[in-house]
Length: 398
Image (cartoon, rainbow, N blue to C red; front, side, top):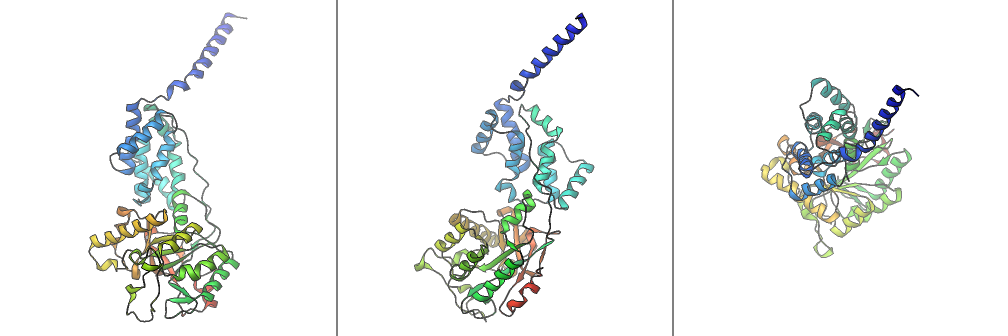
């Protein structure tokens, strides 16, 4: 064996041994580095200084190598706090450039990512593109943190181009007035939807589709009911279970009693023409339905027309109703159906400030899935004057 070959073998062995030991030392962040790394996510994503408990928890995970940079980014981006900010696609991208690349967006990359988001690609898909990039890996390496990687999920394949969001009020065995339909009509509606292949989803399912790329059924539908009448429990709930369907009920929380003794009536509609006096739900009834899978979101605290009250009062209505429902169900409240269908740009601007990501109108027709604004979702109102045989046509079912 020649001297040159022996030297080459020795060099190769040394090189291999070097790489064998490097991984144990490359990702060894100091406490200061880990603190600085976590703080940048608080600053750029949550747009605030870190709280002591949260910072300490994240730093410990980094130091113990229990979490990678990619996982940390995911946890911040899909936290309830950040989701509630309801950032536009444009702002979302700017935040990712600062948090993941430590720079402002360049026009070419920004335009490409924005085009994908506007086409329906999920925010998780885009985040994966950022954290799997060399630029993010280099940033993590400068802090002694392992970058890791993130699965972007499947590329969205939206087979449906629209989603009917149905608006109901009372569902009674003996309906009265314009806003109530019979139990038989509701059963006919659910049966029609089932026979035509529609599957019910919740509003949070819809949000997760656009935020995280979770898959929607081929024919999605959302059934909603405003106010929170007791008939949702006594009449609608058994029919929903019959078809294995879900429903979203928007609650006026100041009219929800703690038990039978404190059960309220719909005094908010007292004296209104074609609206009979009806009993409202109680929290124990809501709890049972919530455990089954029904969704409860806000219809305000007092059923006040939001555009007619001071902005501070509107803010209270949003905050208090959200608090009440989350306290009793343990599930997130991030949508509101506007009382009387009335809102304003000023009130809509409050939503991200108080933890909401979306709002629903009282009308507007079948909602498009290809051009959607979660803060202005359309619904199709079903009232007593519409015969059940016309539901398929009114909802544009196919």
